[in-house]
Length: 395
Image (cartoon, rainbow, N blue to C red):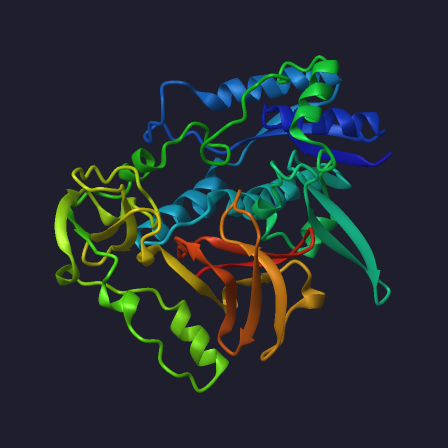
């Protein structure tokens, strides 16, 4: 009998994951990951992890499977939280959920599971795993979830072949309503529980408050840039080759305070991210102001009116060599090669046609349509049909 360790989070998805595996005849063990207990960072008076671990325990009892809580808060702090603060202080926007899957659930947690003699680790992600024999060896594929509304393959875009070999995603074939229905039929207490929002496993975190506890506030100005700013309207030069063209279009706009007018103040450029609308608190404009760029060195926020402001849009982005990750290493591009794909730069975003261009220093992703708020530090993931082939951190 194969043994599977399930990451029981206290939510409906992981509860149904454990239930289905048990029905399929696996020996199932439930583990709850405790990733946060730093009371100096106050989040809310509620203590979500206690409530969640309790729900996970009740589900495990109901299913008759062994259950324990593992404390991964040290690793989580080192690998996720410290990294997040570091990225934000550099004016980048990390994605903690992608990192949590790569660094915690499918690394630290997987190690614990394997020490418990597990053959597999299962999670309640809405995605699927495929397998194909290529040149005599099994190659594992990460496929989008059947429920296109809930597809979570993006969050797993940094997994490797070694991690996929051991991974199971039992609810990937189901839709969310079907999952809830199964939970109800099995009388699991999590059947009607709301989906958790906030950082992976920290619970109900509001990011600005969280950041303010570690990154010191410092007052700076908000500068509004008009949509006829010269950099938006300048004539495109002639390029000697494709790479020069890609480099030109992937470069972000650069601003100085003199390029616009000061319309307000802020408490720290490192709390803001491109495309953000909330928190600017500047009135008197026809359309809402959006952050179009942050300068953490000069501590200036540049903003523009309306979500169609030119400063928000580019169609090319760059990923440096050390940040390129292929799930399908057999398909990795060599210098000079290109590949037609569909790509997204954030979760929940519709896939858009793009071409990958491998150059000596990294990889350009050239979208057919301009993308709003391409933000350094976020992950771009590329697909063919429903398979996620690889991803990278936007430079």
